[in-house]
Each structure stands twice: as structure tokens, then as C-alpha cells.
Length: 459
Image (cartoon, rainbow, N blue to C red; front, side, top):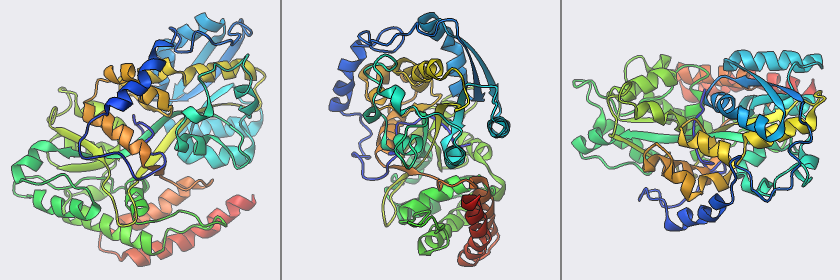
């Protein structure tokens, strides 16, 4: 999983504020201050004309992927019940099992749940094509259902790209985004006299200087395990100018951009990474970094809390946070995200919409961000001075989230067979760590994947 807390890590992508000074600007702080005072205890404007009690007595069922977002909802949902009189029953299930259960029940046409937690980067296209989600567009335009502060323009570009279908319908509300950032060990950098890299080329050079096998330290660590490795590789692919699909929906991950990105990936994980990295997922990568054995690590912004936990980390207070270095064709933060939607088969859609609205409210988003459990898609939360002051992570971490939001770009193609894409191309990447040729492996993988993609769109 690649989830975490991040400000819309450019869920757009590229260009950003001054990444070097790691400071939250005074303007940014002031921008959100006015909005902060308007919040009621529910996190919704006091002037809202929503009839919150309209569906008092209704009971809603919610299916959640296990994690901090679900924890946050369950911890505070009594506040929603007090506000609305709506009873909420929710279940958290491990991510992979939750996805399978959702598909089985939605396919049946009689899901046991009204509200569903979805992983955009895996399920967006599948849910849209199947027609499983209710259109929230009319609800958002109804002042009796929607508070004045909940407007499309408050969501980041990436959030809207995830939530809307090609007809412009809002099929879910963007909940939490995960940007990929660069973590680095300040102590190791200072010891070797190395500057924080601004480009991918500089990152390779820095990693070489920071690698000292005799001391058991390495310049870089990241996901080498098949499937999981795609989220790391994507950062390089995007920065080399890569696009997943052409205008006709054909896959493009075997072209020159993909080959260049794979050569960089191969170099980093074979020349300056710990032994056994081909079997690393985020857990093993984090372990190497928290033990002080690796100087740099690119992964989701949400992994910061364990790094700053004295009980779990040897690098507390030594971690630097910044955006992923720029490539020759751009600077992007590979972005992933979660949404909250309503089953089209639900008989309680308007009541369910009130719950979805509360889930992405400013109060709930602030709690999620401040606890390090996720990064809201809403700009008004990320830019609120009062919210920022309550964030427990280092200021550099928060700045990396804000900067990443400005350069965010979707980290996987929006297609139905996403898992097959990650498996097949991911296997090609892993093969290069044993010396296989990047161009040959990518061509083989894409030739295998293309018919799978074509069949999925015709089905």
C-alpha cells in the first residue's frame, strides 16, 4: 500500500514553490486563518442551511479498508450521529480482502453496505464502468444537503480527476491522498558532506557518495518487490516525461521514457541499495531507513509517524523531508488516493451523502492530518494555519506535503486491470535487478499486457 498523509502532492504535478527553503510561507498561513474561525464543532460552517436531522432514525452500513482513515471515522462517528440522528455501523477489513468483498457484493446488485471506501488508484475505472456508484453531483448542488464550504474547487486537481468520470459526474468525494516524497537521513548527509539532491542525476551521485558497505550504510533504498515496485518506478517514469496511455487508451510503458526510468531504477537498486532489495516492499525499506542503514528513501508521505517514533526508529530527529527530485522532463510526485462513495443500489442515498460529507469535513480532515493518518484532498484544510499548528510531524514534512500537492500526478494508469499491470510490468522491473536488459523486459511485459487491457475495455 502506498498510503499516507500528504497535501495534494500536486496531485497535479510539477512546478512548485521553493522546495529548498522548507518554510511554510506567511501567506499560506494567513490564507487559512479566516476559514478556521467559521468552523463549528462538527467541522462544518455554522451558517450551513443543511437539514441535518432530515433522516434521523436511518441506519447506514459502511465498508472500510483497514487503516488510519477507518480508525478516524470510527473514533468520531458518534459526533455525526449526534448531529444527524443517523446510526452508523461500520466494518474495517484488510485492504485486499475489502476490495474483493466490495466487488463481489456490488456485482450481485445487493450490497450489504450503503457507503464504500474505495482505492482510486486501483478501483476508479472498474467502479465507473460497472456503474456501481451513485452520482453525487445533484446532491452537491442542493443547499439543503450540502454545506456552503463543500465545493468542488476546494478539492485538489488530482482529487477531482479521481472522483469524476468522463462525463463530469462526481461519483465519490475525495478523502485522503498519498504523495510520494524523498526521505533522507540528515546525519549521514552531513557526515559525508553531501547536499540534498534537486535532480535525479544528483540523487544518483549523492547515493554513490553515501554508500559504504564496510559501514553497512547505503545511499538509497526502495521497493524492489514485484508489483510493489511500480509505485517507486512511476516517480522516475513521470519525471522522464512518461505518460501511461495515449489518446486511444493504448499502454505506453515500453517507450524511451520507460526505458530510461528503468535504467535509473536498475542503477539505484543494484549499485547503491542494501543486499536483498529485490525482495523489499515498503516494510523492509522502512526498516532499513529507520535503522539508519539507508540514506535516502522514496515512498508515501504517510510513513513519517513511525520514523519519528522513538520506540520504532533510530533516526528520530534526523529525518529530512522534501519533494521527489526533478527529472529531465519534469518534476512530479506520484499520487495515490482514497475516496468515499455511495453504492448505487443503496436505498438511503441522501442520508449516506450526509455521512460522506461529514467524513471529508474540515474537522475530520484536520484530525486525520494532525495525527499523521492521512492527507486530505481539501486545500482549505491543508492551508489552514490553525490546522497546520496542530500537526505533530516536523514542519519539513508538512512543507513536503504542500509542495508535493503542487506537483502531483496520478501514479498508475486509470484502467480496470491495474493489478495485472503492476504484476506484469513489476516483474519486468524486478528482472532487471538480476541483470536483464530494461528495453527487452519492458517490451515483453507490454506485449503480454496489451491484450489484457483491450479485453477489459471490450467486456
